[in-house]
Image (cartoon, rainbow, N blue to C red; front, side, top):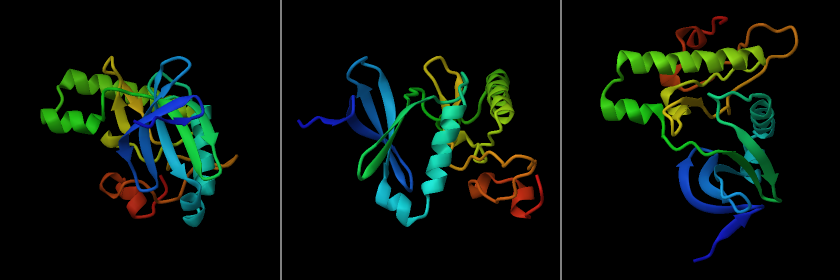
Length: 184
């Protein structure tokens, strides 16, 4: 078996896949820590004019450090790839938990909502707006705590700007105000 390495990380199986990235399980060979490695192809990023978006996502991930937000460890770049090394969260997506159980209890829902509001409030105090909060982007850690992930559509508005006006997000979750191009 061929072991693939990127920097100090041994790269394993694919654990997630999006339109422009794959997420791989990896292990830090120095510490033994498990991480999630988001792998982006440079040529794809350039072709789809996503350079600024990726830079913004990385910048935002560096800015936010909170118990209910997935932590960025580091970014590694090669000639052809960008590797975003993230904290590995073991409990899966909140979406899958809801699908499996059919619903959540009121106390469990309240706990998740409190954690979500705590993290969102923190992000907002840092000037960061996620813009794609949905159960698929809310992960559960080994203690059953909520963790916000995927800051790919997030933004921090320029100085003096209070309202973001770009319509974005996942269509099934977008607020009606955004669909109708109203300020929000």
